[in-house]
Length: 111
Image (tube, rainbow, N blue to C red; front, side):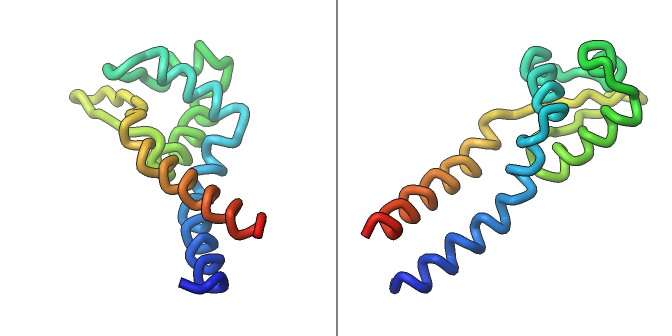
């Protein structure tokens, strides 16, 4: 594959990853992610996150939606209760692809 094609492919990959990086790049969402990690696989409810982060319920819900849309957070429903959790294993392929692209890009730019 020629250089132009590689740059194009890497650009497409980063376009796909943009929502993921934007989601985890926000300080508030990083605090929410830490709450989710601390909660473990059983998850945590919005009300508990509001207590831990001192954010309003609508603010937490807004940030959780962004994290969920980016594939960082998952939702488990138990009756009328919603539990949010993070599955690190799901993030590994995303981060592996970003790492792979960065290595290729570094090689291209160092030539």
